[in-house]
Length: 219
Image (cartoon, rainbow, N blue to C red):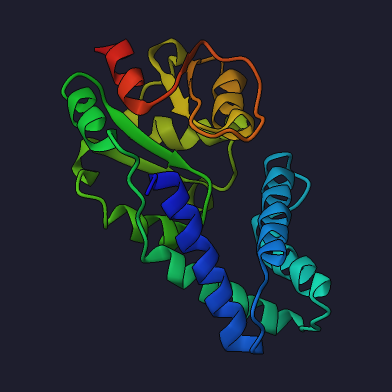
């Protein structure tokens, strides 16, 4: 099974499990897709600074439950979100070719993992990948106090490297609105890994179809 398909399938199963355990409700394919749309829209709002991370964790499940005609108070929404995130923190999805690419790149470059997300969830995932030692540091939005693509996120990177010269950085990522927009915001070169057929478009210094291709570009 393709890694992206596998990741989606497991994510859908986690959603179904937490909803069924709490409400005894079995979700339909349409309802699962609806959650995906709601969640994606909330993350876009976070990137545009229209909502906070705390508001996102409540809003996505509040809107979803309302679409299912399920009433829940704020405490219940927080508990639901916590259960969902705890399950997700135990999973790590490795893109094919990522380990080899990172190991080769780490021989010549300092690699820093940058991510929007909840600190304990992201660190739980990172602990499960077999090449975590390739990264000289990790910058998580929760810990730096802002989300990509805000240029202030760069503070977390420079705190690790001590280097503020953006010409020495290349931002690699698969999200135009988060990764590539962040790189452009700080004036760094960018490399868009176009792995998802989700209609994204935008401008980047380089565009590749895989991490292996990105590594070839740099080695």
